[in-house]
Image (cartoon, rainbow, N blue to C red; front, side, top):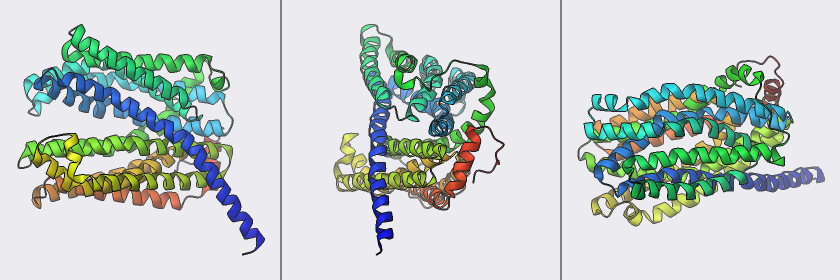
Length: 470
């Protein structure tokens, strides 16, 4: 090996280590932020669980539906902020971060009223699909109490992306921790002291979301860290709504499609023989998968931030290196977690149920859960890369094909025709995830990073750009 090759390898090795440090400083606290935010809803369900089976069932259904028909949409649409703000920050167009964030907030607030109508009349359409009237009524009341949280989230989600794209993560971690403490205390007080009943957790959740908005808003307003990037509300924010929607809509589709497919399978499990067992086990598997996803989500956020920053800064090789590092980190984490789940498969179910039949079924599902975890980790990073580059439209097409053309039909055939039940459902989702990850990997591997730099700078500097994503 000549000295030139040794120099290139040394430079690549040094760059790899430095990139690991940069991404770890973003990913680790983002994982903690995700877990803390996830625990807000867990705390709500736990508090209601002691009130009775009717209240617990109602809140569980309302939580699921408001996530599917509300919070997940806002979260997905906020992915457009990662593209715009991340690339603008890399290009040192700092004032545009504030403008893009305002455009996102206005856009998400516009989406909230139609969602509210779905929530307000939830009892009507739940009854139409055969849900128990008492559960439908209480689920509707709980959802109505969550409407303030929906509007708060329309501000909070762009605000968190605004900070994330600047690698300013610690304020989000601190605010999420304080909000979780506040929510737990408030939730307990509303349920057991003020006797608000099952509505208490929803009211507490709404207050908690707005407290988080206030804490982060004050930080952005007065912190010297955001001095260059904060800007006053101006007409430019309204002009940017169209540009934001062009990224936000496919971003929402990309994020929500798999989530919706999983929720659909939970509903379909009620049509299987022994529906109580199948629904319980699939719910447990989905809970495990969702809880784990908070970890690769952090890697995906790091990948999105680093890729968008480097593209905006005009560094194609650094963007490519960021992708490689994120994939390595997520892959290592997925393998470790999968091994742990596989070897604890015989006792894993006891964390959720004491019934031996449920525990045994969960144990038999463990290998499939392990495969899902590996696929989810890769998908989280690749989706983060898509958001960083602005490929949301491609990601949406991939997800439609992977899950709705292939994955769900296979799930239905294996579950109902081949009589594999819940296992068949989960195998179909794994096939969909495998196709999704494979296609996104091929797209990423074949990317012309110099071309992506050009498109990023065209987007930020408002030069006429090609409508194609690649």
